[in-house]
Image (cartoon, rainbow, N blue to C red; front, side, top):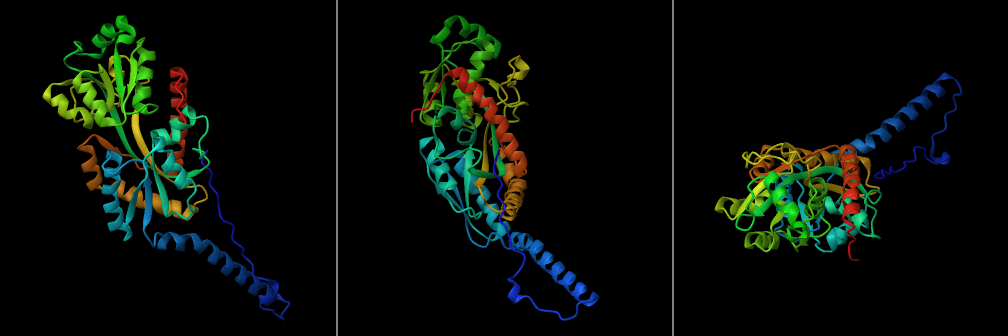
Amino acid sequence: MFTALKTSVRLTEPRAQQPRLRDTGPHRRLALKAMAAAAAVAWLAQPQAHAQTFPDKPVRVIVPFAPGNTLDASLRQVAEVFQRNTGQPLIVDNKPGGAGIVAAQAVAQAPADGYTLLLANTSMLTINPHTFSKLPYDAEKSFRPVTNFLGASMVFAVNAANVPPNTLAEFIAWAKPQGDKVSYASFTAGNSSHFAGVILNKRAGLNMVHVPFNGTPPAVQNLVGGQVHGAFLPLLAVKPHLESGKVKVLAVTSPQRSPLMPGVPTFTEQGIAEMEIYIWSSIVAPAGTPDAAIAKLNADFGAALRSAEIRDKWRAVDFEPIPTTPEEAARFAREESKRWAEAVRISGFKATE
């Protein structure tokens, strides 16, 4: 569970500094009550005052990807709205490498003041804890959630030239007798696109071989070139090749069909359960970040994510803004972690440290 730490506030001054009242009767009691009430009001007003003035300087968001990545680009779009709403810049700080561990460690060790945040993806919070034997951060205890950020479904695409089937049922019937001669690509090992294939193998009784690549572009290139038979990838990555006829999309991992591809059914529609898989990300802060800062950041990011500007830009590329409360984000991450733990167990995959 994400750890929520609250700062303590001393409500009383040293005895020598308190005014001394000679009247020991009801007037003294009334005066003491008034002093106590004033102190209580001042204490209760502190979080509100902080929320009204925060942020009063730029907020830095560390991103575990190189500039130009789709999540990086999406955050920069949100940054424009964030600055217009708050008057403060949202600085994107790219720290790629190590399956997101470099970025996560940097934020876990940052001051817990609300001015350093992490754009965390699926792997960093819910897959890495099950694939790495040791991490320099605790996925639950090192961070406080601010909000979920972006969600995107994946598609199961196949090469049009070397895969004859045109439906998922036909593909399963075609691939099953071939065993490990059928392969699928992912945009990296140990990520959702990898374990989506693990789940499909289990649910459909297949034995497809996983072929990982270092990023989405090479995975798409090898799918289009026929070096692999299929791949789990974002729709945006394969859409141009779908339109050119070089790939076929057999299913989408979302609960409903994509409005950008209404003719392609979901896995659930085609009888394969437990394939509702999202590529998602969230905004988290270091553990110990004050409640008032978390609440203000949640409101500011929520306003940007709910704006028509962001909604329209993202839905045009099959992305979905998913603003949540901090509590909802924490609960979602815990549920996802349990799900991926099972997929990792089935695959037997362990990350190289």
